[in-house]
Image (cartoon, rainbow, N blue to C red; front, top):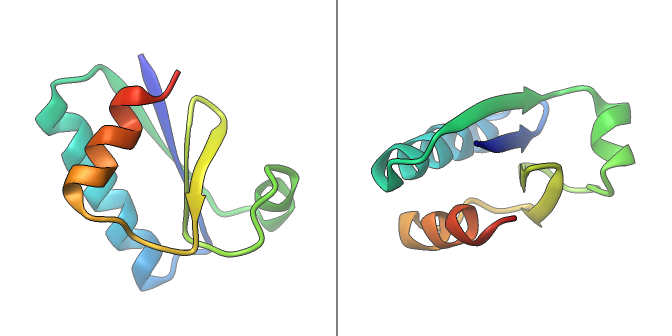
Length: 80
């Protein structure tokens, strides 16, 4: 099971990334768990300075943007 984490304080881009990541995981037919992380201390501990960010299984994959659907699918699928 993949753990998909969206890091951000709840801005519009954070919500957009959450919805896009969830849609990508569903389209891929993966078993997954979504988590929103909005605790600034935890976000900084994960090494993120700009939000929104996406982490898969605890590893940050990118920050400060919302990629397209195909890129998101690739990132989620290839994550360990």
